[in-house]
Amino acid sequence: MKPILVLQHCLGDGPGYLATWLRVQGLAFEVFNTAEGQDFPATMAPYAALAVLGGAMSANDDLPSLRQAERLILEAMMHQQPVIGHCLGGQLMARALGARVHRMPRVEVGWHAIELTPPGASWFDEVGPSTVFEWHRDGFHLPPGAENLAYSPDCPHQAFALGPHLGLQFHLEMDEPKLRGWAHDLQTPLGEAGVQALLVQSRLALPQQQRLANRLYRRWLQTILGTDSRA
Image (cartoon, rainbow, N blue to C red; front, side):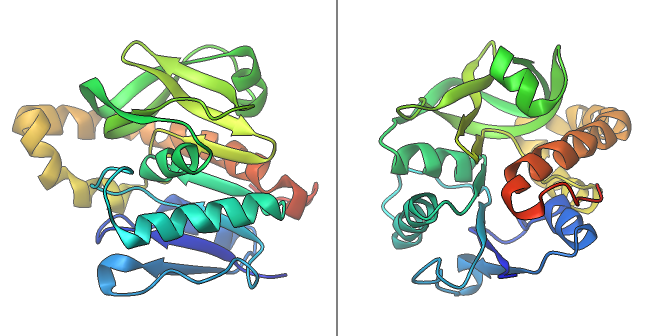
């Protein structure tokens, strides 16, 4: 099978748990990181699916790499290659599909509860609130035809689905090494005491989110995996 293409925008913002999950499934993947001077591929032809990671920039910034990511998103969708976007990646999906990406009234940083809509309960395979890791100042509107899957008080669109494609406002790919690598930067919005509280909360919240990641990643790639997924 062709590999999965992963687009990375910043140093220290790699695929994390997504890479772990793909390896468990026995799926090959290739990561292209523009922060290391790599150009994103010109086409999706060599790949089976697309994952777009987060980043410190806005999806509206005038960066050639962001516009190329949007072109790859649209090409993948046109050819029914499953696409998933994490935070900035979800915003780029929404923007490529004609929806507005905007500055939110408040920044969401750390572990936050999100509420699921009825379509979201089906996608997430659970009901009630989920706790997910957030770090974003922008939010997205829903693209035409997309289903809103989740929301929070400050962010009415936390996730959307359009066919097999999944746009997320949160960092589903978070794992412990990545979280600890981010802890220093998190001291700016949270303060040292807030970071320590977040790390304590992560002992329970991170394994729970990774169980959610198992379900959402499997759903994203169900047309590739069929029923033979191992996580």
